[in-house]
Length: 74
Image 1 (spheres, rainbow, N blue to C red):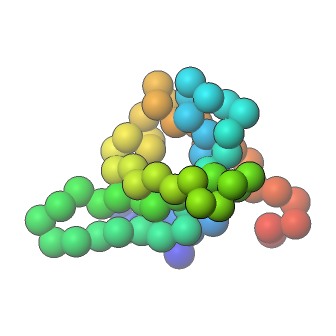
Image 2: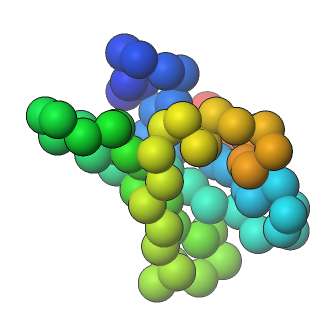
């Protein structure tokens, strides 16, 4: 389900621009009235490592880079 204000959806994968070997996957979109929309992501190799990032930061190529979906994910 893609967010209407951006093209970030649950299941999308990103890595930090400064740490390209670590991949995070979006598992929730947090949209509360009066606050910027955030994505909740977890590290694919270590599920307990979770981060919450605004969609503005997630779309900034200096901070995050989109990673292609795996072939098995469709």
